[in-house]
Length: 471
Image (spheres, rainbow, N blue to C red):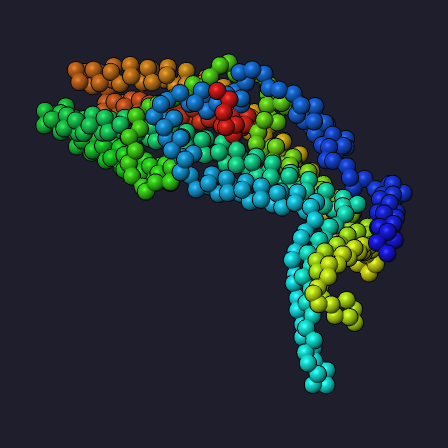
């Protein structure tokens, strides 16, 4: 009897195993991005670049302490990486994906269960007949058609994707801390400049009152100087509101309660190394969000394979080993050992329509993931080029603004001398010169921040900070 069962099982396995070859199904194929590109030149270029290594010293490959050399900023970034809730959740998502991957891998192994049972039966007031069975039940699904294989591969791709997402969050946090740090520094510089200017303009009010008493000017001049002073006081208030909001945002990204942060005014970030004219695709492939988008295509690919596999039968083998005192109509005391083997081949019949619908849906989702990946790649290239353009233009602008500040300084000095010692100029001309100087100085501070933020954006858009360590 046992030999016959074994022959039946072997015959069933062989018959089922050759069906995929007869149908020509590719449900066993591993995901290959090169086969998904079609006629898309962007994706074809990405596939070629994905196997290459970025040039040594490329900005995106540098560790964040190499780019952000300010020790105070380095300490803040490390505090954010240690405490940020979003990053902690991303790490927990990795643990979830890892557990799911381990579970998918364990599906290859048979399941075992101990299921003892007992019964007592009495017929026509006769004494109870007691029976019991204590079996060890083993069940094993033979992965003939790749159902478990594709589930495992999909779980592995999801696990890799979760690590890419964690690195993307990490990169965003580093860039966020750096942006807020330099934004606060810029606001501190603007507040400091505005306060100094307000003191000067307050002295101008007193000077204009003295000139009025001496007959050198009129009430209109005094009123203009007072209005000018009140205007700068109002702008100072707006700057302090913005500074307070930036301080609170900085506290939040560091996962701390709101408080003031001691950040020096007027700080700047220089680009480490020379700026290249173009950005090779290999550097874009280093971005964690690009890698995560590619993993999403792989996950969708394996989901489609699983949907194809649902059209094929499933083969389950089971075995029971144990002892019992019930052998059909006979009761044995003491109990005897027993062994039972079985095989079950289940083929879908009436669920074909559902399987077809599921396959269509997974194919559409696979196309969506490929479109999303293509867009992510184009968006990455756009961000890089925007950052490069912003850095270059603000570098040029900073030179012009420096000259403008120098020119307005000369104008203020000359106009003040003329107004003080001669009657050839009016207070309106002095006011114009002082306002122009303040505007140019504020513009220079803003330009300095924009240039710094362009460096931060460029580093992040090239995947910088997402790599744990490349020091």
